Structures are given as C-alpha cells and as structure tokens.
Length: 188
Image (cartoon, rainbow, N blue to C red; front, top):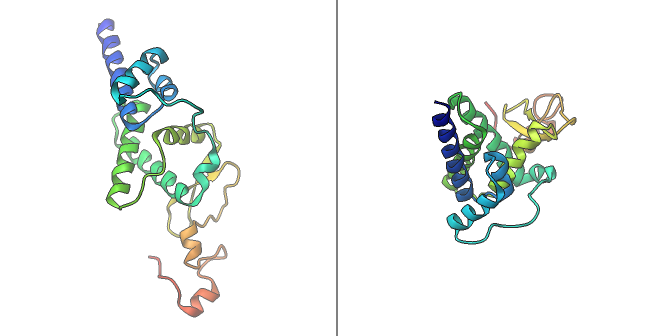
C-alpha cells in the first residue's frame, strides 16, 4: 500500500513540475516545490519548453510588489489565491494552489484586456514573502479590499490609492475640497 502511495506522490510531483514549467517557472522554484532533482528538472524543462531553462537570479525584491500596477496585480493574486485555497480540498498542495491561482489571475487579466506583469516566479516569491512576513495585507477601511503593505507599516485606518484619489480621508468621509466640487463618485 505504501508503494502505491509513493508512486502516486511521485506522479503528482511530475505533473506539478510540468504545470509550473508550462507557466514559465524556473528550475530552482520547481525543484523546491516538487522536491525533484535539479538535473531531472533541467531536462524536463528543455523537453517541455524546447529551449534551455532560464538562468539568473530568481526575482526576490519585495519592493516590486508595492509599485502601482504591480501592486494591484499582486493584491489581486493574493485575493484569488485565498479564494482558491478556501475552495480547494484539504489534500491540495501548495503547488496546485499556486498553479490554479496564477492561471486564474492570467484569465482574469486577459478578460479585462490587461497585460499580465507578474510571472509565476514572482507569484511564488510573493507567497514566500507573506509567509516569512516581509509583506502583509491591509484592508481598506472604505472599499474593504485587501492590499499588500510592507511588514510593520500596517496602518489602522488604511486607505487604498483608489479611495484616496476619490477624495476619502483618514479622518472619515470625503475631503472638503472634493465634496465642494462634487468630484468623484459615491461609494456604496
């Protein structure tokens, strides 16, 4: 019985590696997630992609996620990842969750006519940054959306950029200047 389970686990690792490579993941990330040898994964990557695996440093800057457009996509990825994790069965592994959430992000952005800026490597690093507490998520007090923030800079009355641009203030309500001009739209 244990041999059957070990075989099933190994097959799952190979499938996960293939899915990650099809999304563009680098060998070191696939090796960490699947626990397969780097030597084997380089050969598998070459077979799947038809070209040598990318070399170089894995993206590891937390600041990348905090830039405007990247920030929105990274925060959206986190929301999608949370919902995929909630819906997934208890036996779903981290690799399957990452693949599902990243694929869903790509579909959502494509449907909205937007360009996907975040690679699967960056999505993996984002999850790691949240686990090791380099980044955290803050909920906007007006719209309720959750956005990435550097660890330790969590504001109690956080306002997202969109709500700030609509004239909402930390004191509550709308900025007197915005209300007087009637700028922006009302939030529900």
